[in-house]
Structures are given as C-alpha cells and as structure tokens.
Length: 578
Image 1 (cartoon, helix red, strand yellow):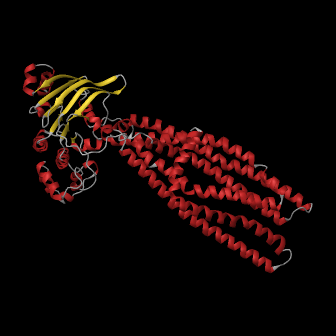
Image 2 (tube, one colour):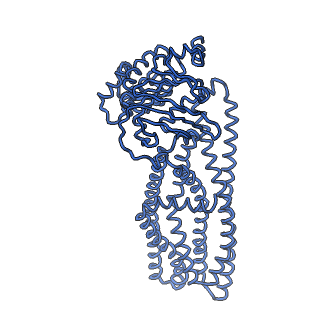
Image 3 (cartoon, one colour):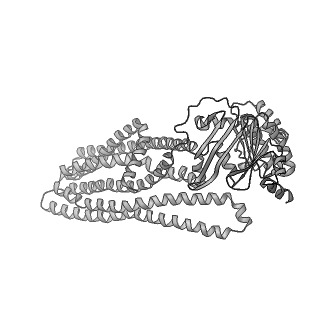
C-alpha cells in the first residue's frame, strides 16, 4: 500500500472515530493522569532505597510507600476506565462503518454483484471489520500512553542523570530503523493476506452453494485441488505477514538487553566515582524499560495497524464505488400507464461484444408481450434494461412518452413487478414474506392476495398457517409453492408493469396449471412482459417478439408466427417434437 493510500485510510478511520470526540477527550485526560502516576513509581522507589532505608527513616518510608500505593491504584483504576470507554468508542465506530457499508451496498448497481463473489463481499463485512476492531479499541490509549510516557520519562531521566539518559537512548535509533524496515514488509503481506481471505471465502461460499451438483458429478477431488491452491496462497501470505510481524519483539529484546548491559556498566562506573546512587540506577533500569515499552507498544501497534488498514482499505473500496442512485431524477410519484417504447437500443456488458443490437418495438398499455429466443439471445438483458439494473449504451427506452432516465429508479422499480425463475424467500413468516411486496398491507390484504394467487389453500394447511416460518431458501416449500408465494407478493405490490421471467420453467406441468391461474389474476390490467423457454405457455400472448443473437427477427401472434414457418416455427416445433 502506498503511503498516500495509508494516510488516506487512516484519515477515513479517524473521521468515524472523531464522532465520539467527547469520550476520546476523557480517555486522553485519564490516560495522561494514569501515565504520570506510573512515571512517578521508579522515582519514589529510588527515594526509598537512597533516603528512607540507609537513614532508617520510618516516616519517609511510610510516606513513600503510601505514595507508591496511591500511584499504583490510580494507574490501575484509570486504565480500567479508559479501556471500558474505548471499547464503547470502538464498537460505536464499527457500528457506523458496518451501517455505511450495508447502506452503500444497497445502492450499488447490479453489475457490481454480478462481477463480485458473494463470499468476498461477506469477508469485507466479517473478517475485514474484525481486524479493524482488534486494533481500534487500543489505538487511542496506546498512542496517548506511549507519547506521554516517552515525554515524561525523558524529563525524569534528564533531571536525574544526563550520562545515564544518553546511555538509555543510544540504542533507540537502531530500533526505529529496524521497525521501519520490517513494517514495510508487514504492510505488504497483511494486504495480501486480507485479499486472499476474501478470495478463499468467495470460493468456499460458491462451492458450498453448489455442493449438490459437485457431489452428483463426483467432482470433489478437482474442487479440493482448486481450493488447495487458494488455501496455499492464503497460508503463504499469512505466514509471511506473521513472520515479519513477530520479528519486531525478539529483535527489540536483543536491543533492550544490550541497552541494559550498557546501562548497568555505565551506572556502576558512575557509582564507583560517586556520580550517582544505587537507587538512581534501579530507577533508570525501570525508566529504561518504561522508555522502551512505548516504543515496543508503538511497534506492535504499527504492525497491527497494517492489518487494520488493509481491512479498512477493502471496506472503503466498496463504500467508494459510485452509487447507482447518484445524480438521480427527483423522486416524484409517477402515474405510469404502461406504454413502453424501445427506440434503437444497443447494449453490451463488455466493450465490443453487444448483447442487444438496435432493438426497436412499442408495447401498448395493458398489452401482454412474450419475449422468446434461444439462450444468450438477450431476453433477460432486455428486462434488466427496463428495470435500469443496467443503463442503455445507445438508444432510448421511453415509458409513457418520458425517457426512462428521467424517472427515478426507485419510483420506476416500484411500478414494475418481477416474478423470477428462482423465487427468493426470507427466513421469516409466510405473512411477512408476502407482505414484503407492500409493507403497509394488513393481514387481510395478504390473505386476499394469496387467494388470488391460488396460494391460500396450501398456506391454510400449514401448522401455523400464515405465521409458519420459512426455512432457509424456502426448503420447506416446493418450487411451485414458492412461485405462488412470489405471485401473491407481486399481486399485493400491484405494479403497473409486470415481468414474468421464466416463472414456470422449474415446475411440473400439473403445478404449472395452478400457477398459470395465479398469473392470470396477476396480469389483469397490466402491461406484461413474459419470458419463457417453454413456448406452450405464451400462445395466448397479444404479441410475441422473437430474439436471435441480440436482434429482433420476428414479431407477431403465435398463430401468425407459426404460419410464417420461420425461426419461431422451428423453435416451437423443436420443443413440441421433444
């Protein structure tokens, strides 16, 4: 990570931390008082050795012991209070970061989720936030304590003995140089580690989701080999990161021991010359340790910060992706009737590879239009453009005479209902799953919508009826039942434009007849787009648009297209004969 990126990430983290400014000020004040109490301890100890014990002065001994006890108590009490406050500050800060991350994800375009592994997104929520947490709670305390300790101890040592002070600090530049060199390596490998964690989490999530397929085709060994490659990359980067991070403490121990030997040697020489006292040497050994501890703490904090900054950088990368709602049209409720015009629309996901080519057609309000064609012909892409999940590259989409870009995405999607091939149900009650289409709906509204969708009968047979809980991915319902719940949800939503995207492709013929009854109710008085591979389901459509290689090759009713005996005729007969 470049220094500018590191600095920018730290500033971003501070922008969250400073929202707890009052608590941080309290922590700083208490940390200063706690640190000063700690700095006094070696000085009081030297007074006991040099003045109270040699002179058998019990009054001074009792006074210095009382002061020593007081400093220990103050240090311990204030340390506990500051740790408690900083834990609160840290968790509040992480709460805000998680909130911003989740809110921003909701505003990202569909293209981001299409190109990103779910596991990597989850890793940013869990692992990356976790490494920030590990550092954040101690960050302010360690910084303030280290700085105040260095200043306070330096003043005390200069006041007590300049020669001994010079002896203590002579090894410090060597340690700083070592920390800097190792720290650069630590930063590099911690960044790699966080990236690899995201990759392996995404890989694992993908294949856990597809485990049924993997087992059915007996690809466990191949998947394991691929996983081992990612696992080894994570292992190597983690080992490198931890190896370099762990070098700081033993390297410092060597330098510390050398410094103590020098201090004892110089101190002994000064005692023999009558230039200092034994109590001063003991105090300096303590001060030397106190002087190095902040350096150790800062070095350790520096190593931990590399991991935290790497995690924060990955979180902020997502937050910095432009929201699809930026520069949006003002949200004015639209009275959409449902006239839709595709005017010479061309679209490509990748540059130079158009999926739709110069598409033009008009749909009248209340018209039922079927979109058919082989896989990859652009059917779903056409629907994605209508929902503005993606933006048109060339041409225009016009709704009721208004360019689609002049309509707020939120208002547009509120007016468009989707019934997809794969129905998603939340792990909550059946009632809440249907109500998701209209959150203000009453229970009686939900029941009425379910009756229209032909879903009420099977819901009524559930143990707790509408209060029954949906299991993960709706596994306690058949595909057909899930589809009926989706139809009930859309009926409750009451959109002006309806899209049925392969809505019956995963269900058997008998169940399809039931679903079709629900769809007939759903499609009343709506402009409808019906995408279907099973061409027998769209014979009653007002118009059929046939796509091939991203172009419209035919348009007409089912009867008209069959009579033409062209591409649609071939598609229909190939299914019928099979």
